[in-house]
Amino acid sequence: MAKVCHTCGKGPAFGQSRSHSMVATKRRFDPNLQKVRILVGSAPKRVNVCTRCLKAGKVTKAL
Image (cartoon, rainbow, N blue to C red; front, top):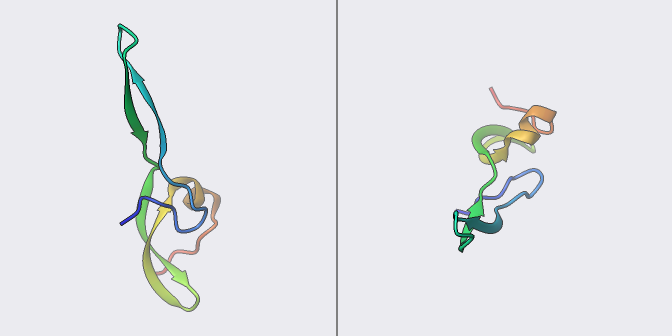
C-alpha cells in the first residue's frame, strides 16, 4: 500500500542523511499518515489521511 494521503496526495519525500564526515546516504521522509474512517460519498471508508488534513478539517470522520 502506498504511503500517500487520500485527501491532498502528499507522499514521501527523498533526501540524504549526512554523517559527521559528510558522507551522504539516501533516506526517505514519510508523511505522518493516520488510518481513519471517513465518509467517502455516503459510505464510511478506512483510508490514510495526513495529520495536516485532519487538523485543517478537510475530511469528515465517520462515527
